[in-house]
Structure formats: structure tokens, C-alpha cells
Length: 204
Image 1 (spheres, rainbow, N blue to C red):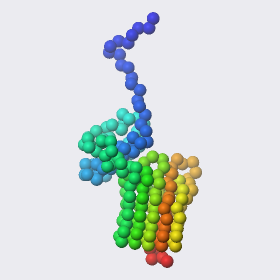
Image 2: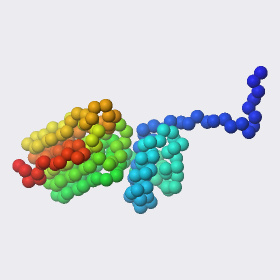
Image 3: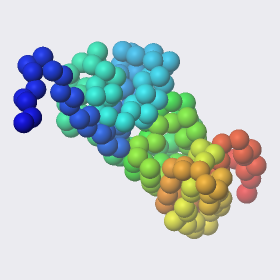
Image 4: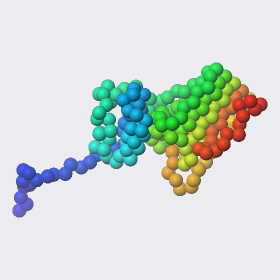
């Protein structure tokens, strides 16, 4: 006959596995905390790395425990930003690089300006993101990670378009980046990290 467990006997609780969406939410919260001056760049990098290495929900909790409740509420701007972001350069030059959280669907527009977006050190939510890159009398340069798989689904109309496609290194489980949009009277360049830009802004 099996005896009942004693009152002081420890019964392990199964750890619930974390999902990609939950890791993305934590990364977005941390990114907003950096923007508000609550975290340093070093702290952000350390916590984001821990978030994407986390296997269970319990491992994610400490990463945002010292941040305000309003950053962690469902529907908060930081969390919504993971789904969609928009970057634009109009009659100007805009650069986005370093450690930042890209949206699953990011729209990048360059009109009479230059937009430079570096995804090499960015946090890419999930395993697949879409970049809708549109230029009109402007230039967009997108740098993707070395191990990214790039699929070009865009086009050009009286413009120039150079997109690095395919797999960087066979066998690597890199992110899938879909490039959509159109280059009209402008230029779109998508290249891998470490590739020199041979496309001059003054080139015709």
C-alpha cells in the first residue's frame, strides 16, 4: 500500500516552457526601459541575451521584476512595437543601429533621403521578420546578420535594387528575413554584415 506524502515533502512543480512570443514581449519591455533611462545599454544587452536563452517562464520573470508595472501590462506600447515598426527618412538621413528591438513587420521608407538600418546587433523577434523597404528618390541600406536567410519579394521601377539572397552559411539556423517593397527612382541595398557598400549615393 502506497503511503501519502508527508506534509514537509517537496513536490516539484513542472516548469512551463517559454514561447517565442513571451521572449519577444520581455525584449520589448527591456528596450522601452532603456529608452526611459531605467537600464543602461550594458544591462539591456545582458538581459536580452538572457531572455532569448530562457527556456522557461520562470527564467523570464526576474528580467523585468524591477521595472514599473505599466511597462508590463498587456497592450503596452513597448509590446505592441514588437509586431510593427515604421522607420522613415524624408529629406534627411536616418540611421538605426546597435542593440534595438526590430518589429516582426518593419516598414522602412526613404523619400528624398537616406535610411540606414543595421540589423546585425538588433534583437529580431521570432524566427522570421518582414522588411517592407520602399524608396522614392532616396536610398535605403539594410545590413542583415551574417547567418540570416534572405528572401527578396520586392521590385524596382526606374530604380536600382541589390539584395543579398539565399543562405549565408549552410546548416546555420539563422533568422529568415523577407524583403518586400519597391524602389522607385531610388536605390535599395540589402547586404550582409561585413560587406562593403559599393553603391555611391551620387551614382546614377
